[in-house]
Image: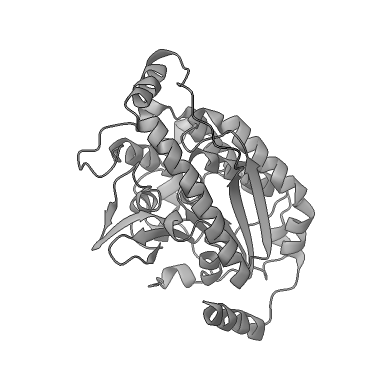
Length: 344
């Protein structure tokens, strides 16, 4: 899959000025000091490398923030990160040094007007210009993967070759734009000589990718949309400019069309994850059930974060055990790799 050697190193030092001297520091005053307060598991035991994989899910992916908040409270370290789609956005922010609370603050500040613009290519409903600016701001600039505090891999799909592409070098902003290029909402993203779309098309929950990064223990977080009986959607309610935009989208038949696409993606993602779990499952699986939250419900951050926190707390004992267990023996890691390749 073209893994970069940088991501496979056992340790990495970020460039401090890339985070601490960000011109957007005033918007995120907490920085990352909250992670290091108090004794942590990482200080007592550094032999086990913990990897976390975050699934896609659109606006529902903000539930990952709740999981990260619980990990911070329990001082559970994260040594490797991988993400798909919205999970890739959250993972990139965390790998760049943002705390879970800062990422939540950013998610709360987003409004429909902050991301909606016309796509001039005609290959998507929404252009990526505004989103790119928002991502660049929360990351603290045009960071590269070498500057991240935690090794990160973002998953996308090559539209021409029909294969998975793991991005772990170059521009982080470009990697995020590629992993979240969900058709038909966003246009495909040109990355080097490839035309990429959302990684959820092939790998909605990349726990195998974070394992390839060198994680000894893998925790996978799946945002799960609870499927209910199909119902036609009602005209959206809202106030002000955003309410008008939502109503216009509905009248233009975009909203019902996206509703069908969303349902189809949920079914596809569920089946893909089921198949991957049969081959080489993660050491710990956290499922976050969410009902009534759509891909574009940007105003449902509270509901999603609380659901993520509740799901993580239910597995808190398992999380601690994941860190306190002995590191795998070299031969077991080798056999795990062989078994995964044999199983496809």
